[in-house]
Length: 309
Ligand SMILES: Nc1ncnc2c1ncn2[C@@H]1O[C@H](COP(=O)(O)OP(=O)(O)O)[C@@H](O)[C@H]1O
Ligand SMILES: [Mg+2]
Image (cartoon, rainbow, N blue to C red):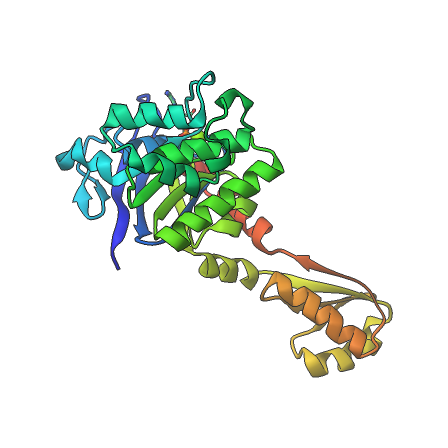
């Protein structure tokens, strides 16, 4: 497998007493949407500054498309488009004029501008002043700026942060489109599990500068649901258990009115519900205990004390 980004034991300290990025090794497969997930202060932005050359590691341990970042400065910047938090826009200029400025500064041919506007869904608003843009439109213009040189890799730091629900959906759809239709590899950070879960194919979880989890979306969901249970509220649980175990052999009575069975996914809850109705079992309630959110909280809570240095 080839990696669009790879780091090997990456470290960074702003101050002597603390590492903000701690022995961080990550691999972003080419063609993936990689969600870099972690709570505020986890070290996401610091990592992204190291990946984009805004901060330099003291070792040669960042590789972009297999090439050392340090040994290929500054040409390596041509292979990536970046957006760190909000784009800086000239609000009195139109979207197209903002892109034209960037193109001129970076020596990019002007014929890329219309393509970028089109892809970002801003062709219709190209000649509007950006002060009239919604936050979602401004953010999409920022992504258009990052794509101007048509790089294979996009690195975006919390692009959905601060947007309203419509803006969040617009950005999410744009990322999926860039990945599916243009084959871009996208590294995107977020502090929201729900966001990452909806968009990404691969997930890395960082906490206190330490990589806590790395895997595909499916692997993450499977690890999370391994520990989850479906709880059925059924009066006279003992009475109904034999019928339930005929379908779900691992079902157990938990209390007078409660039966539990292992879950494998959120979708399964709906399926079990339908099945029980079909069997005429009087279920008063059904819920999932555990699952993705609880697993995530567990991941970012543990090893608090491992904050080294
Ligand atoms: N310029 C800076 N100077 C000193 N400490 C910083 C600086 N930027 C970030 N930090 C610290 O580094 C840690 C990681 O921050 P950051 O990478 O911004 O996290 P995230 O982007 O995940 O919210 C935090 O503890 C933060 O306070
Ligand atoms: Mg940040």
